[in-house]
Image (tube, rainbow over all chains, first blue to last red; front, side):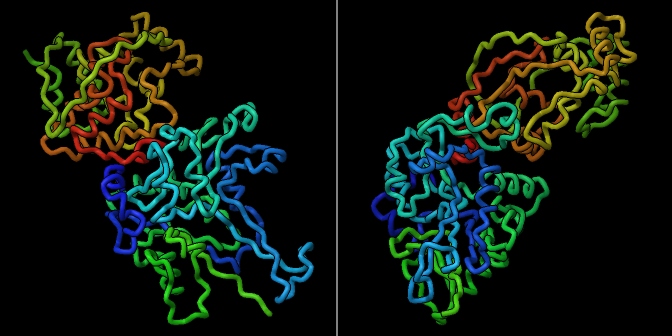
Length: 281
Length: 207
């Protein structure tokens, strides 16, 4: 979606996706995360740090909520009625939830940006243009998932002292103080996949673009792909779980199916489907 | 007056990149015939050249490489040395071995060639300085631009690729060491993208 489109269709923008939206998508990158497979090992988070030049802010700033982890693994203790009565210990049973930007098709962060630094790309990605960002932090405050991270300081020297700066990924910039950032679905990898496909004169195939977290996950809990490609692994998983994009409430023929999207009732139309953990009661 | 373009055309009209042998032969013939410049500037079809000029600082290089002798007088295709331009993000600086491919026999008495030979014998690359440097937050690929303006451009003769290069690099054929003569600012890029109907999506170029 171009900026012009956002401005012209502002009023029905928030509801537009239910009628197919104003987008003329080339791709629709989506993800499926199987929480039953997730062991909470944090490998995805580490991979994200390495791939996306994320600053390591240190314990104190992390405690203040200034961490820059685009992908955080949230930990939840089980509810007492299913055996988690002692919530203090892992033995009580916990579950993990990898949280990254949900790339909402009706993103709440996009309309509030005063300078249109965040917008929707023709790939269905929720983009953040660092150069345009003035650091108003409206987007972060309007995100129901709290998945946007603000650079309160310039972390460059502290996070990558010589010679660590040599390991920075050249395919994306190092963000400086005063800029909002968030998960990009590894847009640099998507871009490379598209360029390669174009050079070879073919369409982008399933598996050409893989995010760092999906690539790293030891249990393959994270699956990434193009929703418009009906044969892709991820769109088959979505179809199997009877979860569809563009709905505020999923109507499932089989209520036993595990697929759900977080806070979809808020009409954000997130692009990540989670598969609930199966537990013995 | 016969010039090098016609000479090379005699060998291969659809020449994409001058092969070393052909380049050498063309060079030798050019030397024999004592050819000069004065090639008429052909227009690039289906393209609007970007406007804007800039006078950049002179960047001193380890060797004063004369682009004019190579590209203009001898008519060597830009992509003969900058090989990666058509298949990669960066155009690439040729390895010294490529220079030596010709200069082990050509113009060996010239001081600049002797300087080059010194580097070659020391097994050391000349540390060329970057002249056209876009900021780190810009994603630019030479490949896509060459595909658009040269290889997928109907009616475009690949021998005139220098005119496409000149869109952003200026008339390098008339320079010795390359100098920045185009602003390479966002406005410069965007105006050209608008004129040539290139993508206007922020994430196409910003990273």
